[in-house]
Amino acid sequence: MPPESGVEKKLRRLCPRPNSGMAESKSLVAVVMGSKSDWETMRHAVETLDELGVANEAHVLSAHRTPEQTTEFARTAADRGLRVSIAGAGGAAHLAGVIAAYTWLPVLGVPIQSKALQGLDSLLSTAQMPGGVPVGTLAIGEAGAKNAALLAAAILATSDNAIREKLEAFRKRQSESVLAAKLPK
Image 1 (cartoon, rainbow, N blue to C red):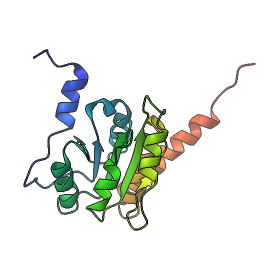
Image 2: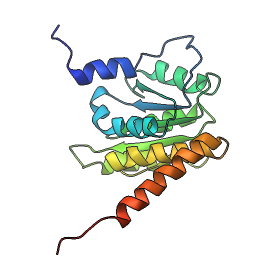
Image 3: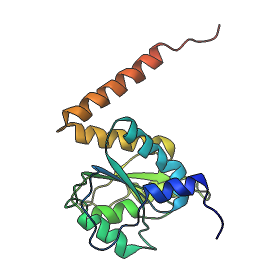
């Protein structure tokens, strides 16, 4: 077996394999991706949650290749202490929809940019949920992953003042950065 790259080591650390009888989570947000290759997009959700101090965990689960584990993850998420799931998948994968079907928790979907249709297929499969099974769908790719983390933090901030203060500080820094921009002459 070839040695692991730095990204693979980080993924292995961040993406423990859920198994039967999952332990209680200290995380509030789960970031789930359909394959290891989705990490390049979904890491932006993890990094944004980390920046805001929101406890999170990451998993690689597939709606099609690991259906039992994905179902178990979704069914037990609330009981384990999770409060929001962010699910990213590419192509016609329906990871966010499958998770939403098995939990009452908010599920935020991040369409991953695909080679075939530049993410339009991912966007449509995430956004076009039947009435009664909502998935909050964000933008395709990196912006969607970052915004999913910010939206998860905003959901949590409605009942957590510490997260609210960190989110407000983030927004203030963002505004100050825009206002401080100098244009070339």
